[in-house]
Length: 143
View 1 (spheres, rainbow, N blue to C red):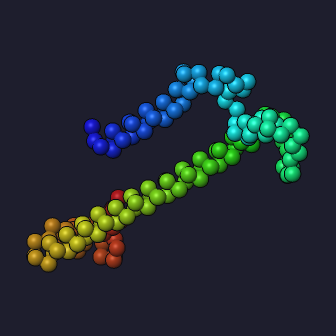
View 2 (tube, rainbow, N blue to C red):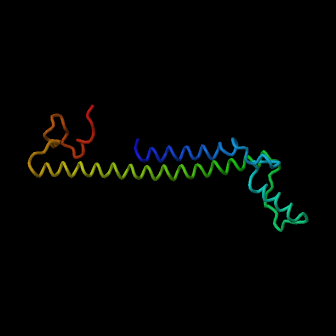
C-alpha cells in the first residue's frame, strides 16, 4: 500500500470516527436538543446569561418556516460544494493538460532528435503511399 493510500485511508477513518463517535458515546444526551446548530446553542446561552437581552440587529430576511430555512441552508452547502468541485476539477484538468503537452513536446523533440541523426522512424507525408501533398493532410486520417 502506497503512502498516499495509507494517508487517504487514515483520513477516511478519522472522518467516520468524527461522525459516529459522538452518537455512539452519547455525547450531548444531557441537553434538550443535543445536536442543534451553533446559532441555537448561542441563543440558548445568551438567554440563560441575560434573560432580558434584546438583539440589536434583526436579520434582513426571515424564512417563513423551518423547512425553507433548512432548504436554503442545503442550497448554500450545495453551491459551496459545486464551487469547490469546479475549482478542484479545473486544477486537475490543467495539470493533465500540462502533462499531455509535456509528453507531446518530449515525443516531438525525441522524433526531431532521431531525425537529425538520420535514423528517423517517422516517415514524411510524401513517403507514405496515398498521402496527399496538401500541407497538414498527414494529420487527417484517410477514409
